[in-house]
Image 1 (cartoon, rainbow, N blue to C red):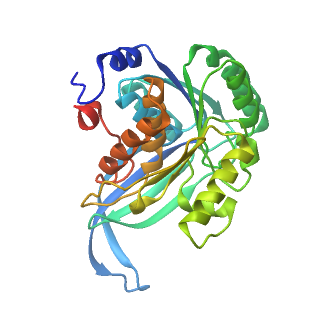
Image 2 (image 1 turned 180 degrees about the vertical axis):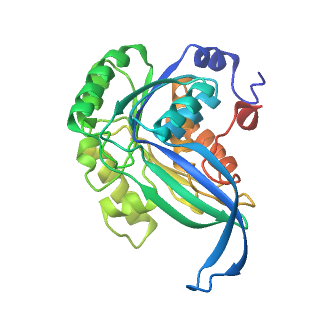
Image 3 (image 1 turned 90 degrees about the vertical axis):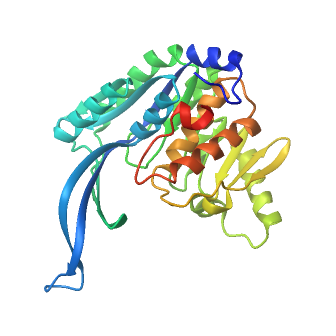
Length: 315
């Protein structure tokens, strides 16, 4: 393995690290096809499908990104007792991820179906329903069993119901001195209180902190949120404007590493996965952000939810 900037000490540390990912999993299904005409029934393109591909989505994509960087990964989540759930289990096995998936027979596994024509997403259809409270309670007891075996906890919240007990999970991890990284959803950030790092994107941050007019006002709102929630760091991803890291030491901005193709789906998954891996290797937040930014620059050059490999990142 070539380090390319990663020291032997860090590589050895990563080889002994285990990361636990908890959150909403989903199946990302892609229908690829040709567009050659407009429908006579409505002013929409007719897509003739010639290929289907299933990929891991949501927290499963975060886990896949962690595993792609050579770190032992465990994923805890909920799926339905259906073909999509079985497909997710199979892909996780192929990716070498230790999957603890609770099956809920009353649940349909979340599917995000994207129709792609001419390398562009033409339509997305979502199939989803929330899991039962009973399954979530089972999942919480399993979480307490898995937690002591991990070095870092990554919480991937897609707002689909799998993280009803997220505040309990964060508290349990903090009691054991395990760093917690959260990719948040919704407007109730109180539930993520005392996490180590929160990684909202710009739109998510704006929904919680409100609008701003100047960069200075943006910085103030971010630090106020960080302090108010008792976070060690707040990392705001800003698409083509890069990333901003807020810590006790101040603010650090990094420009995006531009790519020709630009597909942001799943980029946040790659960012939090890389950040977790780099923090686990012993880096500080600023150095870990630089690597996460580099990984984001690579993954947006790929179509759909994808991963960055060791070779691409430090090979």
